[in-house]
Length: 506
Image (tube, rainbow, N blue to C red):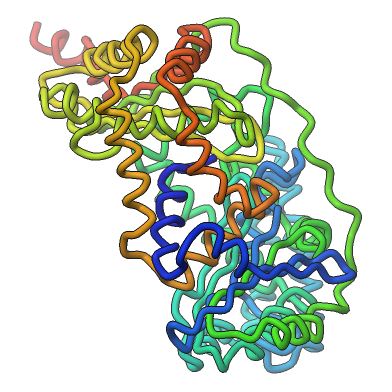
């Protein structure tokens, strides 16, 4: 589960405003509506604010072969408004949207022919598409959805797509809860995916900025693709360029219909609320939404590796290194063990990586994170590092393996164990107590672990871990045949061709 240890620390820090884990259990109010929508609530009157979050089990892992990138694209589209928001006359606009779809589909199909495409036809369709998009602007009100929230005192109005889910977030004054329910239910019932092809170009640019032109993004994408050759975790969230180029409104609307159903979602509201009144309010606005047959879980399993996988990614940047080991996800006990291993290796300046690799000037940074790229299915324990010149990626890799070997052969000392557990305990009483932090964690664990109560048992399980458990896990998973290694290397300088200049001097 991505950055699971860090997220859990944040969650337990958030318990500062709640006396104990047991108290939290008593204060979370659950309600499941007849259509399958699950609502979690915590009543907290520390400030007159609320943090309502909605999570849909609709990530890139849920896409089909012809819709790669659609979950992320759909997240963009749901900020475009509805039949009443974002338009001055939906009926007239809708006629143009249908024509845009027709032209856009024809243009995509012609472009897909590659070398056999008719350039003149492409130019004609591009001109026609541009003309219809300009016509649609007559009725479009750009950014109206965001503007409404801003005018009513919102913060954190955002969304995010991962491999496992898509989440929609906002914070509002407590007296705006009904406004939120009205806006979000309208977005789910009457979404209009206007400006689809305009936004598709924006997503292409997003990919160029975040992946194609970024050494870290490029390395990570190739690393994950090499580590997962069967499971869809290996597909980038944003999609491959050719995937994005073939997305259309029909695909987005179908994905939306199936995966944004009430019985495939989790709603969490934390803040100054009355639970009984909130249940009635949510029923008023969301209760008439129709459930859908739940989309199937991914059944493809990643086969055990039969040897180390190594790749190099050429880029004009300083070297970077990523190492990943396949491992099980929650609720397997070894997942807790890897949370502990992650803390031992890279949690702060007393961690092994920092003391033995960073302070020794072998690397600028070295970090271990449990749970890439997601948590619904078996995932990776990942180590990433940046060498410090004159050391190479190979030097850092060797130093990392030396630390992993120690975990296999040397029991973690009692003093070190106590230090890590003390850090966990300290997280219970530090700082963060926001409604948003609480809402995010409840949403996250209910959505991914299947039950928010997973967080209540995490600390207890951490205390069950023994040095022998760490040695066993290290020996089981930290093997050469189970690892994928990706290295970012500088492109070699292209040698100047021998030819004209030399001949001309003769």
